[in-house]
Image 1 (cartoon, rainbow, N blue to C red):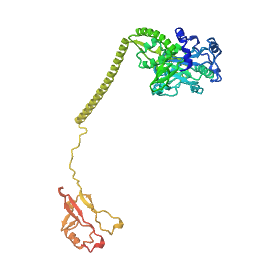
Image 2: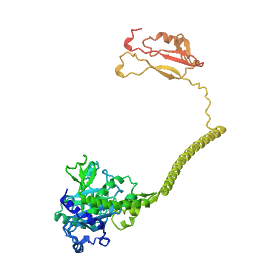
Image 3: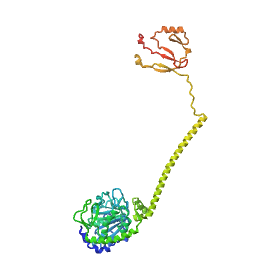
Image 4: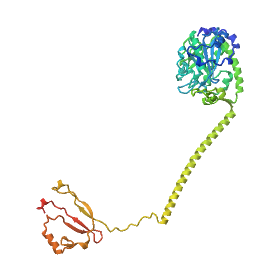
Length: 497
């Protein structure tokens, strides 16, 4: 354990009763004109601040400590005096912080870190896109032991936050100068203590139902140690828990079992007195808040109460307000009534949705029924007027006879035998009264049977261009015949029968 802590403990029993958390409300505003600052990193604290520090017996280059309270939206800057006790020198109003009360657990949850974070000179970023920045060092040893994840969690300017603590540029200029002077004075690590609220008995009683209460009780031990000693506690981690100002012969393992530990005697005595007072105050607070629940506001609700602060500024400027102003303390009866109203509103919403679906279905069915009725009425009207009736089929006397039609060959196939079937052709009926039969030959009009027969006998078969026979059409009407054409032989096959 550090010798500085051991030396300080000897004074605690006497001084603890007189410790107060003095606030400097009149010393809250930052009087800085950014337009007149030529270099952000070399800005010097104003003469009024230097004078104030001197009156408090604080050297300009002495160590500093930062302490954040989310609920109030405050960042405190403490600085060591010449007795190595820290005094509050600045109390800044945080411009924006995201999420709700509670620790950051994973990347993207918009939660700002809670816990104890050591900051070195390497954590300072003079080239930040948000004017100036100091990295919080998240995740620290505790966060890693508990599988928390996240990157680039900062204290920075520009008044816009997504998991960070954002200040105005003027505030950040001054905080950066305080840290630079402390590092130049030899400080190796600046402790950042980030709390959800001041760990007073009343606040702990008010938030007793919060899911994070066990985590906050662990942080409260470190808070109490600082309240008693006015010095940043020595922080270790074992069994995945924060350990404060504990002496141990073996090293601490963040995920391993805690070694045998002991609290320095003077510190233990001072803490016993402090805790006794706290217990009395807590019992009183529990009586005050019995039957009530603190309703933690959302980020949107916090933004709503400071929306007017954005007027006339660029869109990136996004103050969030504090939880004390946006939150609400409610009785159990009020909560039950609010729950009943919410359930009633949800029930009405569901009923309205079901009614809308039902009415839409009924309207659809009615439209279909009306359409069907209109179609039926139109059809009945047409039938009554004889419109749209189908014609009665009538007999068609012009039934064509099927005739086999010889296919015309290309000239290069004139000497080949035609073996393909011929396509049937529709021809006009052959009227009996114009044709007379003479033996096997037809007798055309104007010819006598004798002359027709003679012509048939005198003409060789090979030279006949076409032999035609007329046959009655089966199932046809009288006078309808089928003319059958025989295949014509090529001239060179005249010797074939």
